[in-house]
Image 1 (cartoon, rainbow, N blue to C red):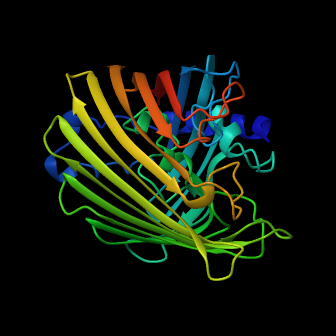
Image 2 (spheres, one colour):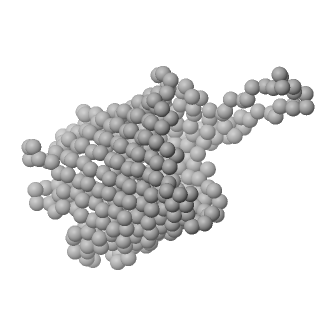
Image 3 (tube, rainbow, N blue to C red):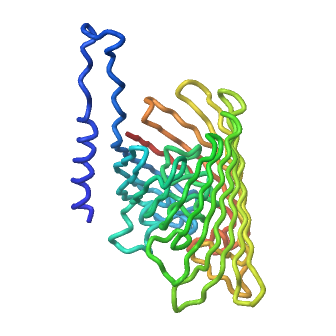
Length: 374
């Protein structure tokens, strides 16, 4: 599939670059004869590459980081977290996109998807059913969370625990309505919690409200409700809410706060396992090309619910972890970002257990990255 789609993407990108209009002959143009401005090209292309090297302190010789870290999950290895290329079309009545990606992020997040689907970063088609509204169907980025899959777009190099254990992508249909430039409302019908191929007979529902009362402040509320679990196995109803806000206090200082809470039905009728998680970000522009971000975070999951690699049982221990990170960014050009981050997490054993230390209760790493976008 990659071999078939990549030439198509490159051809579309070349077409997008080549579709330019000749400059008007201004020497022979009077005000009454001034031609109308050319319509913007509806076709655009994009791409990004995030190459990284990380080192874990006290590692057991493996190149893998803990199972519940999905992004930048390799250590003591030069790797590519994500390489993505795609094209988008939007003439303000019809829109669509197709993007392909590969890297360690894809291996970690799409391992359960079919080979024909896991390299699709996005693939959707949409149209305006009426003014100020869009209806899209296909594969698109998640409506949940402050942090995205594209590393260069995030305030920090690595993802928070809450981001790595909530959806980065989803498949289904979404309806978006913008009653006001400051307010966007979205309703979704999805196959499930971060899955492309349906795994049972149920569909999930989601909503998103984004309100931007001023140029400095953004508030987001996202919800999800669905029944998770493949057909033929135990299935549990899941409820989830994500809230975050960002605020630009000054030209140099920005802050963000994120809080998630969810519940999932247990094997005991009438009971639910609960998880809640929060993170705070402070970003400061040190100079024209330099910036620093500090992050504090915590994660609590009753009996380890929704944490990858943990199946909640009556005797399962709760998952508790928290810590912080400090990120330094240098941008030698507008589309290039060089990053270095130090991170420390601490939790109740056996959260960070290793082959050489099954009682380890802390984890630290250094990660560096060089990312470009176009």
